[in-house]
Length: 354
View 1 (cartoon, rainbow, N blue to C red):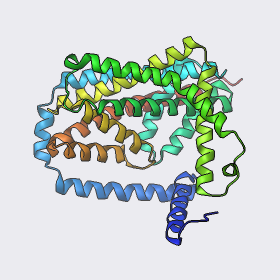
View 2 (spheres, helix red, strand yellow):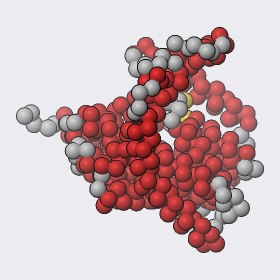
View 3 (cartoon, rainbow, N blue to C red):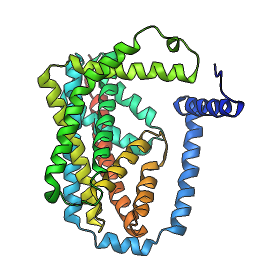
View 4 (tube, helix red, strand yellow):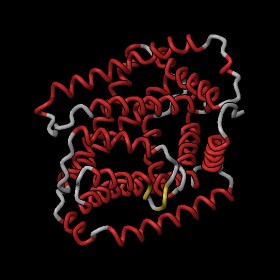
């Protein structure tokens, strides 16, 4: 299965495979182990934070933070949640797995609560699919819509983040509006052409090849790439109007998320360049797909955010303050999601039978 590789590399690959299987395993015993690891890591982080972080200075930064900017950022993030829900509504409708917009929106908010309290993103993703399917009654179409939209969002984030790296000395939208508009238009064009390019590549790869049945890492990667390309070619089946609506929704949602980061940063005295914002967002996207949650909402994203801000020469107290503002936003959504979930549970309990 691992022909052509040294014993050292074979051992690395097998270790990675075992770790992946452990992460995906959702049996009761494995969940207990993950919970214990999460608790231990949480207390380890707390211990490190108590020693390293200048809490008095951080508290002073928070006291002097601009609450108006924080409020504006929270409103923009709320608008982004609406656009995310409507994006799935559009995709699911075209997959004949239609469910109400408000059902999607409320389920998404509830999942933000479970993101806080559960130690694995795999469980949250499965739960999201299950809750969607309760209304749609079409499991395959519901899963296809979820996977497609996730890949679509990742592609757009990578494109925009890479484009922002060219604005390495630029901090204001007004001064460089033409360049930013050109970047957004370029991303939209690339998104529109991606299904055509993927279809062309898939046709090339559909020719008989030894990699289709090869039991090797290269063969596995080849088959995964074909599945990803096949997922993107499905976008070509949407009519032009739906394609443009979906692109507009996803682009707008992502821009609102970028704006939220900038507002939260500015509220504690941090002024990021667009290049720093692009690098930060791309890295956090990568980290978000690593299924590790230390406990009570603290995950690798929080650690990465502080680390990268310090790397950008931001004082530690300001970096921690921005992370706490972002964490407060997450807790706000988690509380809202918990209240909605309680309402659903009470309603289902007292709902008349039949």
